[in-house]
Picture 1 (cartoon, rainbow, N blue to C red):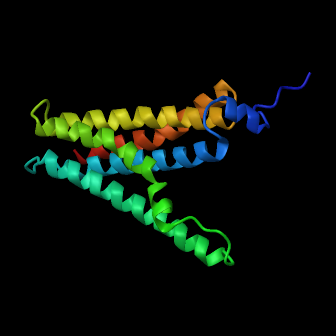
Picture 2 (tube, helix red, strand yellow):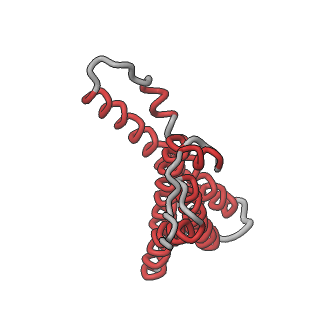
Picture 3 (cartoon, rainbow, N blue to C red):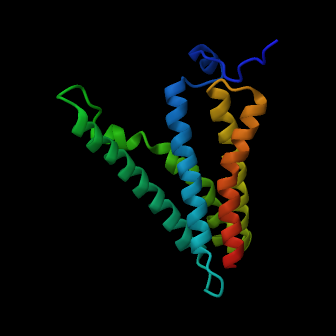
Length: 178
């Protein structure tokens, strides 16, 4: 007897799991991008030996996420303009606003850094927790993306671990720099 195909070839399977496939794909892409961006920024901004300024770091994470989201949305507008032949195009503003999951994914990191501003914990603790949170979130989004695509649980867990490796690499580099 042959092994069952690991991938379910149907859009209806993906729809049963939540968002329509294209919407889920875009949300996951932008969310993963935002998590990686926030992790890299928090690791880069927490410089050993410098006076900690978690408020400034939180502002940089937020502004960078907003700028990246705007640039990414506008790049889509430019790319669509280059290939479209006068067809219907989404507005520039709508294309930029569609990038909101990138900013939303960076908000937990911003919140953790703002907790350091309120003296709930140190900036180093906020950075450490943000890196771990973002790595776990990458794992969860990897599983979610695979399940949305119709993969079985074993393959979805492998996909989650592969996405999580991005966070683990950032944590490793952060530990080496510290």
